[in-house]
Image (tube, rainbow, N blue to C red; front, side):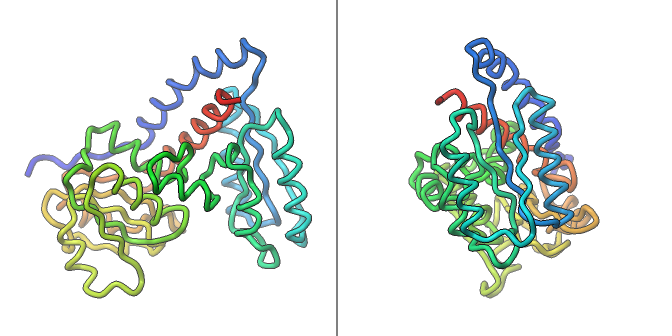
Length: 278
């Protein structure tokens, strides 16, 4: 096997942003400034950091960031009212509700309240259904980032066996659907899966989305597998044991600097797409 290729998310992210710049300028010439509204409920420091990062990324590119910060004790009804106002606001093109939300809020109900044409983070069941059926315009941003990295580096899904570890509604399930739509044979694994190492050993493409630091070991991998690590755990650690997986893989995303930067770029892209659709 040749040298392992590092799939550099920063390079992919910059390429996406470069492609967006002339599109943003063209919109502004017509009097439209793309606008992403972010809603943060409560004081979770990680969530606050993520919202700030997303807002700063918008502003650097010339996308307006409308930041809404609600109190920790906000009710579901109060949050729904805020979302409804943003749905009606023609100057807002995308809505992002940062999760998790405080436990008294019905998160699913809040996600479902986001208008489909403004669901740039791919969190509604309607958006997920469209993604699964192959005509969704805004897939969840991390799955979209994984596909973008594969496309950028010329990694074909067609005819390959893709193993996805994780089945969350905004990562594992939609990325499984996107890979299936790209003609991969997909196995989705989860906490009830038996013989996980044996299944991973069959993977041509492995997507790690389990939320457990260094959970996947290099000895599980088939020689030459492509590893896409969507995990982001405390201490900037992914879901795969990087050193051991690097030795077996033909290509691998690092953490940090892999899937993460591209996820934010896809959010920006979806916001510009939404602004162009008007």
